[in-house]
Length: 357
Image 1 (cartoon, rainbow, N blue to C red):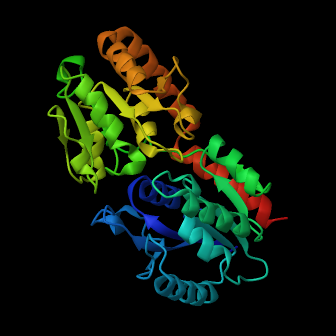
Image 2: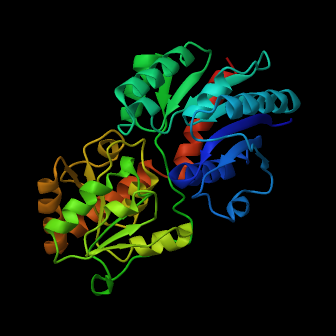
């Protein structure tokens, strides 16, 4: 019996979304004939093709761009229309907002089922004006009327999705804990005190990270990543790593006992999952995604202000017993609920239920 054909449409193949896509696809290709139509981002690794199982067909779409461009978006739509006709998929799964719009307005085969995962709704982006965010919300509201199912990547994102379309569910993001890249440092082996991971951009709140560092000059801070807002990080006790491959990123995460994520908004960040699996002392901002996985006082802390971040960082660094206990709790939570195998199996269940209706 032939496998069903599964098509991923992914415009935003960079950062955490890229890690999510290749790890999930490498699991699902054991059960489906998989094709991925994708665009590239500046932070997409140069060896990205090597990450994917050779059974997966990769199609690069040059007209996928992050910003709204009528010319490029129309060209991408025409290309997608051609590819869908050629592939004739049984399942189409659109990832992130741009792919979610283009993929949901496509004319698809009669028996084809369509899914959409936002990875953080565009209308939650605080760096856009209220007017632009309202437009994004209206677009999502209109698209929600299309025949598709939204699969959010966290409980919080699902709650928002259901306000747009009751036909929504969620599957928590997961990481591949079988990868040979996770190692732990001895207490005496730390080079830094506090780290974070991600693109240095408005969403990740480098202003707050910098403010925290300024208030704690006795500690060494590390931002693992790079980005357009690196100039915001002016504190002398902050080091910026620049763009690195994923193995090196995880290695650097192990060089600090405390991981913080002061984001203004999130989906469900892969970096938190990795930090928790590494038993770091995790402290996050109180936003969707972050608060869906961090249980305040059990497997990490949720901070609502710069003052709370400072207090919690001091607690984590000065009380190694507490940090170790929370780290072990976090590690167990990841093993039970947030692995790539758990995630892939839940997607399979949803696909199977809908396709076989």
